[in-house]
Amino acid sequence: MLITAMEKTVRDILRDGHLRTRGKIDKLRELQSEARGLQRAGTESSMSADDGLQDDLRVIEKALHDLHADTEQKGAATL
Image (cartoon, rainbow, N blue to C red; front, side):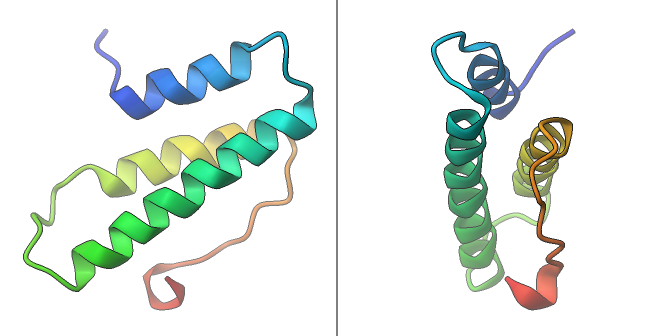
């Protein structure tokens, strides 16, 4: 099964034995912020509608959920 670059990045963070849960959550939140920024830029430009950014965001949010992090529910209107 092929995995995306974001899935690999998230998996590497989750498996990092040197990071405590808080550190993993912090790194995932950084990725989440970057993914939202890219998504926001995509809505303001002519980027492809099927660019994978939504999938990346889902992967990150699932990892945060799995770590029992308080996740913020934000839809496209609150980007």
